[in-house]
Image (cartoon, rainbow, N blue to C red; front, side):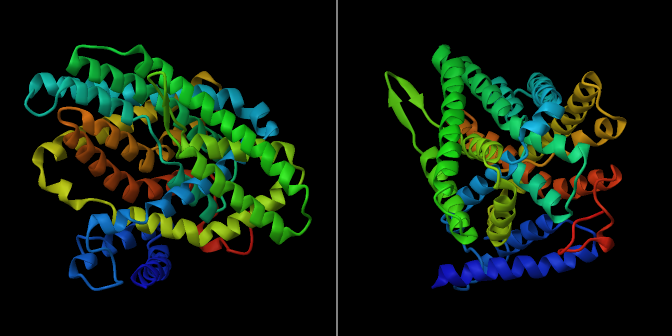
Length: 420
């Protein structure tokens, strides 16, 4: 009973706050995150009223399965952007930009935090600096997609952005696995080629293979049904299935095998949309079904923003350097790679800003990094950066897309009609 009441408060409260946010020209996703922050254990949840908010962080994390399912649908939707027509037009640009902007962010954060180590070795170690540099590569696809959907953004920048965000997950996974392996080697004195190179490559290959099988199986199953509602139900069921399978982990011969939820669901969506002739209509219906699910996802994400990290001066110092270096790396990396691939001036100027949001993927990496000697500090820094990026990032994304001319002014938009 309390769970149902809490979910209803999250959903209704998030939507009501979004009306206030609209008057301030803020994206709805920012309103949902603020709602979650208010309902979290540091404000309303602290009152301990049954069904109203989350009294503890554990109460908020208890609904993580809902967040995982939401991420699955987000990745499935982004996979829709990888249609052959789009890949032929922008595939090369997306791959180059996706790789270079992530690597640039990692390098700048590495350099900045390693310099901090030499100045203040008591504040941060080299292994932690290298690990945070790799985490800097990750970009949150959820916030980006929500801003694009709310304002019905469309154009060269928007299409490239969604493709780069999708590619970013695979690049970030490789960078993190390699950097974290080096960090562990620095602490233990033993480097593992399996951990640094083999396991991340296997994870990416397995994720893409599972996603491909899922996309083909989804199309094959959909052909047995002609009712729109039944086809919608089959699509939802397959996303549940791919999310569940992507959570599987096993070990064989000393090698850990696992899957990336985002890559699996993206690949499922990509393959399905490229081989199914009725995919566009079906994706539109899926988008309508997932709207309340995404609201809950961001409210729950906001409830897990940990304000206690603001009490540590060292975390604030490292966090500030991390945010500045990562933001500069994303912008310069995007600008340089866009120049290299012949993108327009508008894309060069605005793409880097739209890649700033950071959330779930980075937090997952931070949890893995807790095995370091000062892994708790790494997690706190990432929590601090997520707090800042999630609250500020969507607004910056909106402004960049607006400045690029790919969304209409908010007063002219309608929930019933696409922007023109």
